[in-house]
Image (cartoon, rainbow, N blue to C red):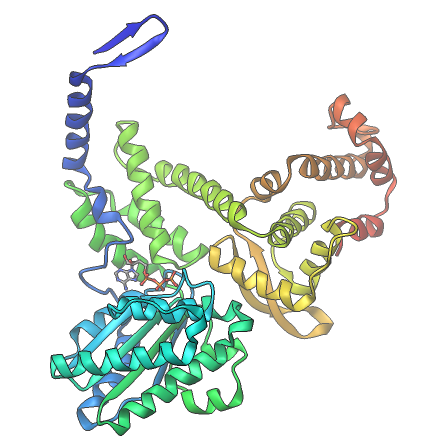
Length: 457
Ligand SMILES: Nc1ncnc2c1ncn2[C@@H]1O[C@H](COP(=O)(O)OP(=O)(O)OP(=O)(O)O)[C@@H](O)[C@H]1O
């Protein structure tokens, strides 16, 4: 019962009880926690090939040998961490820890995160990386001796994070860990490092001496196909929903997810948010809820990415949104996007190099805002092409509303010039015509070539 106190609303205990019983009622038809992607899966669906590869690498310890380094790589949400954890927990005779390095801003920070996971206090920067590695070694040996095991697996999740710390010499850090594995073998013990990253380790600019030592034990996780995602969703939804849900809903969700990204985490999220929307509307879960949820998640994702992005990363996003909107096309090469970035950069601002922008596009892909493919660049051979997977308007408005209004005005003017019957500036409100008058006039008179030049193609 709501008590109105003047202009304020008071809540009494009954109100709280009502909310709780409403939540309980909802939980009885939909158990939200079963669609929490942070919850480790009870069963790993699919991934037979990768499971077999990893088990084969690790099981060699029975004969006294394991490779010192395994690189597990692939797109976000492709099941890399889940599978590594699952295998390490189920192959007999292994002791392991999984350390997520996402929060490590430096190589030294990464060493401290490893020590923390091993249950040892971190060190001060001044004590140096060699001492940190020695402490890791001491702790691993003591753990193996205590547990009476011979193989220790150090799983370094999100290893990409350390490669931004160029001053901390990430390549050297990997080298030291591999040397540690060799030193342990001299003591009759085995250490295997599993590095999990979005790209294969050898792409991170390692020294030759590291490359030759880590070997080529690589396991690739391709994005999930429709049937993989469907399997994962079916398994999760059995636990999440008390009544059977329309199989077409799961199929549609799997279809949307596999065609856009092949990320299991995002597919599970999409199903959860759709179910929440359906429940709030007191409707049975249907395809329309998936579409609403998709829109909501896309907007959240763009907002979150841009809020955490550097100034230059925002410009890269803006440039991609600009060319996608003005050109109406889909896939763009790094060189086109670099040109876009340069054109939106404010005068007097330091311009980043081509290589850095190319790295940013890879980072952007990992946020799920863009996807890439290898494609033809015409006379320039083959290369990576990028495509925005959210509406450009959403990105543009969030980068800068005023700037985006100018782009919309330019396109409207160009379209009206194409269709002369509409006359000058058709489609634009008079206030907008005033605001972007000069630009509009120029673009109305422009030829196709000039338009292409304006777009930056
Ligand atoms: N094969 C699978 N079977 C069941 N659930 C899965 C599977 N793959 C992924 N998932 C679900 O998706 C979530 C994300 O997977 P996971 O963290 O393993 O992906 P990842 O490739 O390590 O992603 P990232 O690179 O972003 O860390 C998991 O928590 C799990 O709920």
